[in-house]
Amino acid sequence: MLAMVGSGLRSVGLQRQTGRLSRPAPGELILRYRSYFFAGVLTFRGLAALPPLLNLIGIYELGLLTPLIVVWSVAVVVNFAFVPVVLRRWERSTEDVLPWLVLDAVVSVGLNVWGAAQVPGSVNDPYHDLFFFWCMGTASLWSAWFGARAGVLVSLSAAPLQLAMTAASGWEPLSASLPVIIGRTAWLLVGTASGWLILWIMRIAAEGVRAEGIRVGEKAARIRALRELHDTALQTLEAIRLNAENERVEPHRRLEAIRDAARWQAAGIRDALAVPDEEPEEDPVPALARVVRAAAGPLGSVGTTVTLRDRTAGRARLPQGRAEALCEAVREALNNVRKHAGANEAAVDVSVRPGRMEVTVSDDGRGLAADSRWGFGIRHSLFDRLAEIDGNADIRSDPGGGTQVRLWVPQ
Image 1 (cartoon, rainbow, N blue to C red):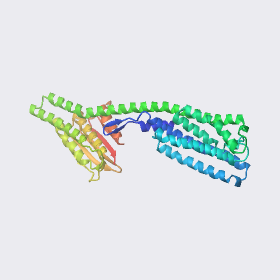
Image 2: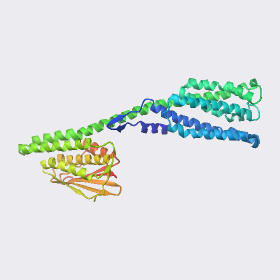
Image 3: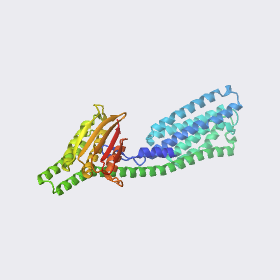
Image 4: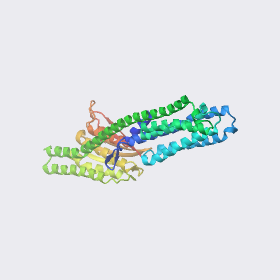
């Protein structure tokens, strides 16, 4: 059950598709869980038919039972063959499933009546249960798909079925033992009740999983939206404010710095809008170079020069989504240099390691205080952004000794 719920949680997690969040249909999890239950019933039915067969073989000669063994083997093989089918085709509608359930009921009746005629002795003997487990599975399947009432009706049909089995075996129908009829009917009712109970539990679990998936997805969407605001609008507004208030700089240079900040953010937004639906691999170094060039103006307005050092020798290849995330993380690191470092020089070093690409943003500024705490930008625009593409970040800094931000993503 826990494995099913875990699988459902993974499947219901809201996914980002072309900028939108897709939610599963309300009954999607129920259909998926019902397919798990169907597979369990089919598996049980195949395994439960083995003890009566072994009991029968222990009583009668093997040659006498050859037709029974052949039909039993074919029935069990076909039964197990449907297990992967129901797991793979879980989204089937009632119109698709009903003919198969009717066929299963017909096969169940046919096997039991035919088997009763083949097995020696009275239907009241326990080894006549050879095919009766098939009926138990049928009752559970009808209960799972159409509800407890359908399962009860199928279960109650066990009484006339046993009378038909008695007649097929050469005995008077009314010679069937009433306690045996009641006992076998009770088996089917137990299968119906268990099917209904399990699916009721699954339905509760599905609703809980779906609600949790929606909550997690909405929280992730909110964080992504806040991150975009932080990385674009907030950075531009802060740059405008800082340059407008910097009275030590001549007005025309302040205006030029404001233009550079706006141009930098516009370039970032333009790059994001240009990402195609597909993700071909590309060399991310040119995109990183554009980020560094765009950052040079705002950094220069606070007295910091920035250089890009490419050590990849043309070996850097990343899917476009990873390249975009890496560029945005570098942009955030350079923003922090501009706002907090008070550095004279900053450098962006790009290199390729086995299985990954690494970018280091370093500066010779004032460094971080020992009790510094990460703000929103560091937590979400660096660490969380890279974690989404299986990357990571590491920040090292000493007071007065500059800061080094290492970013890496898998190739």
